[in-house]
Length: 590
Image 1 (cartoon, helix red, strand yellow):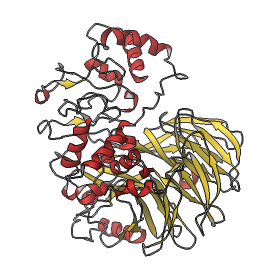
Image 2 (image 1 turned 90 degrees about the horizontal axis):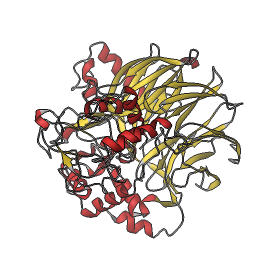
Image 3 (image 1 turned 45 degrees about the horizontal axis):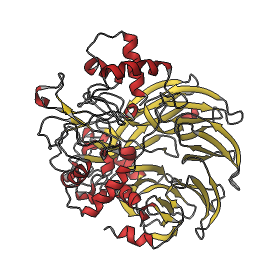
């Protein structure tokens, strides 16, 4: 299995490529392809795969859009994100506009004539005038918005949020979709997804404007992690929103009863409206659903008809891995980690294989009819190979989940509690980020694993239920060791705000004895007074680097905000409310 590295080393030098998004050019003869590793956009000839034009940016491209006026828009990653207008013919930059923290997706609203851009780490949706580039409105949305579309004739925008925004002891625990009223510039409604919905990725709208479809996971976090068979731990789903009244219709599992469709990401409806296509990054394939048959089947269940043996009533659908039987096909892409794809005029689909660095052309029968290597793939390095294996659900029994299913977004966390059995049963713990885990042993909430190397191998054995060669674990170690933190959005030009500066004084006095050193942990375990009787054991002092993005807090995720956490686990001395607020700002700045 680890022959990837030796094979790709033969490709020689050159910059690494990681093709991620694919868009068809307006004339239908070329593709625009984003390369995250090279921070570039390419224009690629569809007939031979030749790169005709390329443009490099200072940070990776998160999204691109060609509007009806023929303008090409690009948003780029980073704390100082950017909006670019490009000449679609030669990719020349026509304008460059500073934006917020990691602009993640953009859409054009024909009714308002404006661009709408999600700001992932500002947790906002921004409206931008495409001519003056003026920011017209900023609307607070959910947690880490990653997708936006215009619906209902431009009256509303739908925003899909990546993670749950609540304590993990709440019920239900799930992310949601925000409905934005574009006239009044506010959130008109919030559509909750099914319990356990996390790591939402893609959103698309049917050509008739009647439905929106969203990809996400459905974590079965209320069950102990003692098996993975039949989706016991994690399932993979698409939620359907009825746009007539902007309500959630249902959630449909993409899996089969004996095979997972892990880590769904990009989603789109074919131009003729006949099919829904979803990129399955974890199983390296496309999921192709007969959309007409799907809605016929949903309507039949509403009428009380039994359309598949495993669905007795409407409420069964979100838990029925057999619901798509006979109307869904899987098409392997021939590479590893497809994240984006595009429909082509000849009826084919072009998929971008992120880890193996090629474009695959797939025909209407799901067969690969062409492949275009774009350069040296990320799996030609140990770190890149580990990145692939971390996201590879084919390592797991029945392909239900990858490491990224619980640790999405570059090995961070899913916002949920899980009852891992390494410290007994019946005591769920909050998922931890894996950032700096190899530098801050021991691992797990109670320090039950002596180091991250042990935790990685235990995860493969007891979460994936597989006996993987140690070479695979070694590459995953290398990937995790090279993770880097993002700067906190609470910093001002990279420095502490006045409030955070005041909070540091309290932190140094009350917190730094345990949260010490470069990672803000002394790597010891202590008993704390606020554990439940089931958890009356010493708890590992967590590292605080990048804590601003790892909510909820405490070992059981009972607090969604740092300020709430300080009321439970803050200084015992009586501090003023202002002092507590300043301390919270400092911690969030780490």
